[in-house]
Image 1 (cartoon, rainbow over the protein chains, first blue to last red):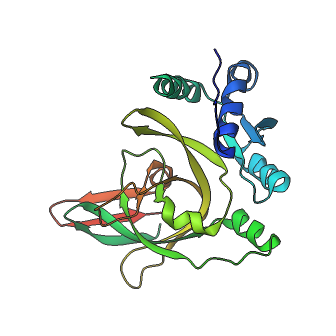
Image 2: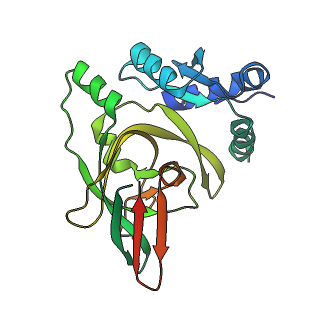
Length: 87
Length: 146
């Protein structure tokens, strides 16, 4: 399954797409941990939200980034989102 | 536990809240030499059906702080990702009661989600999970112990 955004996407949408692209693999190896995504790339995995946030602010400053708990529910939501984008 | 007491309105339990950038977001604004925004005053509805707290995007966007996470919102066409920001909250009860200060919380930001409503945000289970909330219907008041 490929989850992504075509056309002109915002930095936020690109970060979301990068996270969702990595999510199936992350679920197998790091479920429950916290992924840090910025500049549309997976930048690291952290044990706590606090650590990931700190690292996010350090790396990206005032640019946006995502700290996301690695969870199956995001993948479920993404499938609904992808289907609605296609319809 | 400190307790906040407030009246129950016709639309439910609505609280007076101040919101401003969360501790680390505020630090980043200072490092970038950007102005520190004044706290926004708003009303928030206590909503135990909402997993996370929500604030109207128009209050957060002018701060120029970065999004730091994502959540999923239900729309007419299905689910879509929305941005979450780090904020600080001060939740107030009646005069003389000590406000509940929350220095850092991730809240969802939505564009004009409460049009026509007398509130600009929702207090969700991320906050309620830390408190004891009592909705006293017959007495027309609520308490929030934290």
